[in-house]
Amino acid sequence: MEEVKRQIIEELPLPDFPKVRFQHWGLTDLVPGQGQADQPLMAQAGETGIELAGLSQTYYDLPEDLVEAGVLLLPLKQAKQDYPDLVEQVYDRVAETKDRLTAENLQSANTGLFVYLPAGVTVTENLNLFLAHLGADGDLVGRVVIYADQNSQARIVSQLETATAGISNVSLVVEVLAATGAKLTMVNFDHLDQETIGFINRQAVVGNQAEVNWVNAAFNDGNVISQLTTKLVGEGAKSETGVAAFTSGKQVQGFNTEIQNIGRHTVGHIFQRGVILNSSSLIFNGMGRIIKGAKGSDAQQESRVLMLSKRARGEANPLLLIDESDVTAGHAASVGQVDDQQLYYLMSRGLTEQVARRLVVRGFVGEILAKIHDQKVENQVVAAIERKLNNENGTR
Image (cartoon, rainbow, N blue to C red; front, side, top):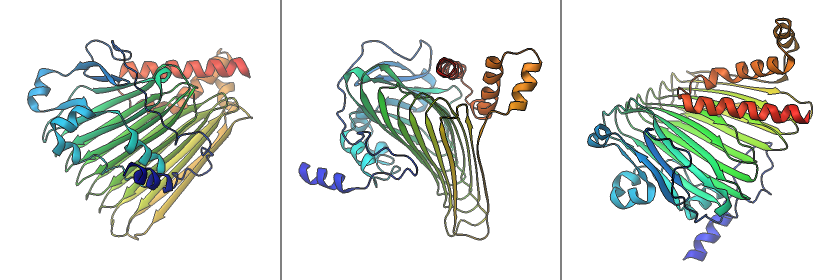
């Protein structure tokens, strides 16, 4: 039976990432890590949330009022045992297993998290999900499952970071279900090191009058492909997806960002900002898809790429697929270098070129990063920007 499953998986096509050559990266050769840690590697005392480091839970803090309200925040393996009916509402239902990399994840995942927000519950503080990748102990192959029941609300901050370096892969699939009237903001900070190759697949299904907004900060140092798909299936469903990405060195990052307007009067907006350094490559593939019958819907997307090196390669590829006439839709895309007039203006005020470039870069991605609303993550993002720019200055 296992041989039959393996054959079926190997016959599936690889995901389609236009203009990104990832087929030789080895993402199909997963060896799930067995590493563990005995103390928190990312979480800090007092933060509401949970941390997994490899196969071990290293941190947990959920206020008593949320526990009493029925909020669940626990490892996926435990959730499958204790709350199978809830998990089955989302698991392998939101992220359709149509490509080989998603299927490999489903087959091999040995770690992950489950979040459940009961109907009518509003979580006022950020819920933090920490995934520490122990690269020295093998690949991270995990799933995160989030179920926001009717009229629940929360801001979930997820951090994916390499904690111990080692040549390895990361395969992460995130499934989000927002039931009628639910409102979620998903903040993701990805920081995988240069020895890590990654496949990240985040998908959401949004119900009637529900809303799922994404804020993705991708500051990886290795080669990564990232899929983010939001399906607006319910009437009046909404999603705003923001992506901020930096590439440096010789790395390649590719993004497929898609919103599907399926229900009537749905609204889906995509905003992407990328900065490219050195000889790296960054590809934004954006898709707005309005399905037949999604009358009164709106699909907009805007992708901008800022190149800080003549050796870099950047692309912004927008695509609109419209099967309904009674809709509004539009897109904008640009790839360019730093505006010399902006630099001149700042330098005329006494700033050095190095400081002026930093201000231009921060301003370029600031519109998206301003929506993080988590001081710790904001500080980490600023530190990542500084680190990448310092490396860029050292190799120019």
